[in-house]
Length: 202
Image (cartoon, rainbow, N blue to C red; front, top):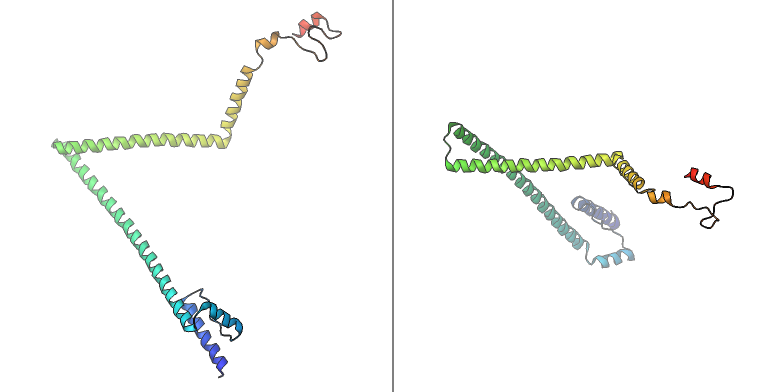
């Protein structure tokens, strides 16, 4: 085995290890030309230093990935805890309301229970009213969007405008004004037109 072939084999082995550890890492070249010497000067280090630098970079990337994974796991855990707490709170509320309902039916409500029950009733009434108002606005938005998509709203605007133009159209003043003929001075009738024909035209 010659020196060049063993060098090529070692370089290939190092490149395969680097590609497994650091996907996308630049491969090490083993040519002894001036081009290689220039690239070595720009990289500022031997092959061992380059490998060491790449391994450190891989460790940083792994740590960053581990931090991201931990963050996602913690967020998921927090969501699950919130959901469990909300479910537990809902179950507690239902149990309290069932006890209050039972006490109300039996007529054994205490003042504290009565205040709590009135508070819950008031909150539920407020929620229902707000939902009704939201439903009305949603319904109005839906109707407007349907009208716009079907073109009925645009047609309605056109007919309103047409009615307005018709009302503002010819007024009584326009009917009594003189009819003008091109090329004549005011007060002169066109040739061949008598006063009787003019009154019939009006």
